[in-house]
Length: 77
Picture 1 (cartoon, rainbow, N blue to C red):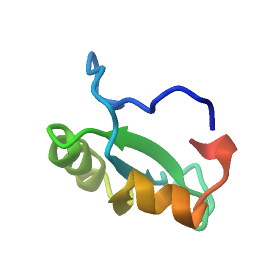
Picture 2 (cartoon, helix red, strand yellow):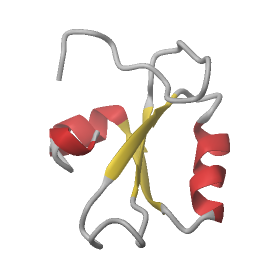
Picture 3 (cartoon, helix red, strand yellow):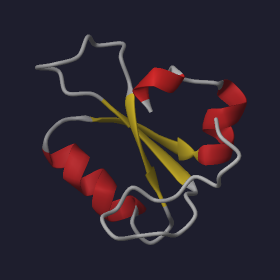
């Protein structure tokens, strides 16, 4: 991970990320693969809903928890 503070993945948002939304598209990815979006508190629900409607959302954890657990690979983020 770089020295830069991770920011929210919501379009136009430049707020520091607090949440990691782990997801995958079952039509494209193997079941164990996890892509990630980052979210601030304000956009967590919106981004989760977007992924959830499509059946893509697998997990939502704090950025701190994600980094501690080293879940996923850096290439998927």
